[in-house]
Amino acid sequence: MLYQNMLGYRYPKGPFAMVSVYTFTGAAVVTSTVFSLLLFLSIDDNPLMKALFGTLAIIFEAGKFYAWYEYGERRAHRNYTGALTALVFYLVLAAISIGGSIGGINSATNKAQGVISIQEAKVAAYDRQIAALDKQIELNNLAAQKYIEMERIATGVTRIQEQNNRLREEQIRLATERDSLPPVSQGSAIGLIDSLAKAFDVSQQAAQFGLVVFLSILLDLFAAFFVGVIGEELRFRRFYQSHADFDVTTKDVPQPIGYLEHKPQLDAENIASAEPEVPLTMEEKIRKAVGDGVITCSKKAVAKHFLMNSDDVDQLFEQMMEAGTIGQKANKHYYLVS
Image (cartoon, rainbow, N blue to C red; front, side):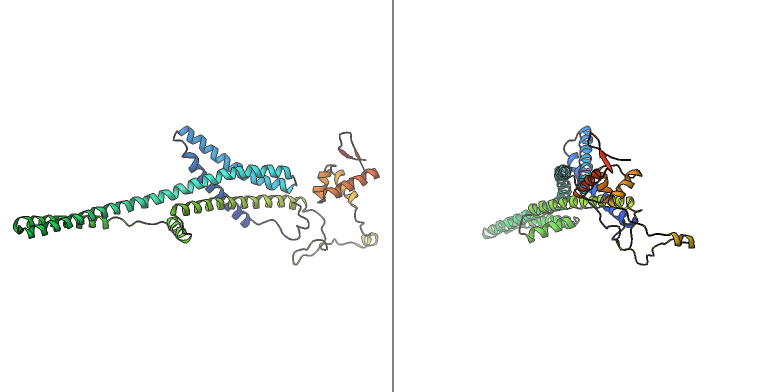
């Protein structure tokens, strides 16, 4: 990407901005790598296979972000074929990474939901036992009614009442144990899944899957964005440093507020002999840059150094060849005519 007139509009990011960018990028990359490791390490229980799959996950993650960085580099140099190749590699590795993130986040969510399910199952078991005792007491009451009708209160009803008293004591004991269980703590993620399920009128499984996919894609996009920011800043810094010594006037590029152009003092003799400098033509600039060894005598080097497009460079080289300023060897390489 060409930074035409960029020197006057912005400067390289400061330490605080770069530390923030690197921190966000590192956190996103580490998080994505951990989620991928959770998926790959669960494939096999063999320690050797765990190590191999873990290494594979790290390679995929590192390769994914480097492919995105390389995509930005090649696109900036207008190598669109190479940029497309890097983008394809990134998309393939990103799909694997997103799958790993989905598996890792889903595993953590299922674990939290499993703890809640165990607690709920314990409470439900106590409720079933208490309900069964209620049914037994109800049946005993029906039997007692039969004994009353048969006028066998002394023998049958007394025994049933004693049995019901034991059953009620058992109910009280079970209810006390149930109420002494620790309360089921619902995490924020589970609460969010329940809210999404109610809002979109879907099952909890569907809401959980949608949330996990969204978070996984968002994590990859977040990391890719900051990797792109780092690549863009590094390219700008290279451009800025290579053009920091350019003689730029205040007319061409806006200067910071309070900028005063430095003008060397001239003595009386120099004032008399001072003559206005004649600006160099582009051909003279190229000849001087090549002669001083700043750049090589090639179209690509000239276009990059002087921020020119390929058509203008081609036309300029044709004019210089006609003027005898440069020549061309048999291998199509250009050279400066001395």
